[in-house]
Amino acid sequence: MTSRVFITGASSGIGAALALAYAQRGAQLGLLGRRSQALQAVVDSLPGTGHLVYVVDVRDRAALHAAAADFLAGGPVDVVIASAGISVGTLTEELEDYRVFEAIIATNLNATVATFEPFVAAMKQRGQGRLVGVASVAAVRGLPGAGAYSASKAAVRAYCESLRVELSQTGVKVVTVVPGFIKTPMTRQNPYKMPFLMPVDQFAAAATRAIDRGVSYTVIPWQMGWVARLLRLVPDRLYDYFAVRRERKPRQS
Image: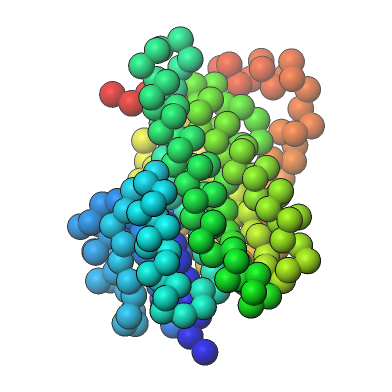
């Protein structure tokens, strides 16, 4: 039976790579993104037929729910991936950055909730399904100049953990995928060294394997998983000493 997969943020980066990975496995996809031409280019490059396209900004909850309802009308949905995300530097002292902070939280956190909402009841009724949230290693410790991004991804991790426990007796698996540095348009703007930088197609292959297994939490690449564990153990004073010397993510121009 053909699996059905709904992916937000599908017009580029991790979302587009996951779309290709699932299409190559014969899945029927519902792909959502806010850039019409880029999203259509992704769909045109995919194997298979019957993929559905939804040009929606994930911050528009009503439009997102409408897209989800349309895809659900075509049959049961096996995997839902909330991949939409934005990353840009912010500084609390810069008053105009507050609107950027709001946009990051709305896109990275609130839209993850809004993406899952329409699918939970149907998955619970079937007793199966995968809800996949995309966090980041930036969630492990607060990064200077990236307070909004770090906060949003830390919240995604905590939210997915809460949801995982809520649904633990239903057969629905909640998977938190934690990318390290992945070669995408989002990371291309980073002005600092990115250890263990991973091609996005390799990331997608590893992520789909983790989603298949229904693992609760996985860091990709695995080397960054060890880095994340070590960062949690570093005392605040030592972390602050090195973090303050780190190059910052650029603010929105």
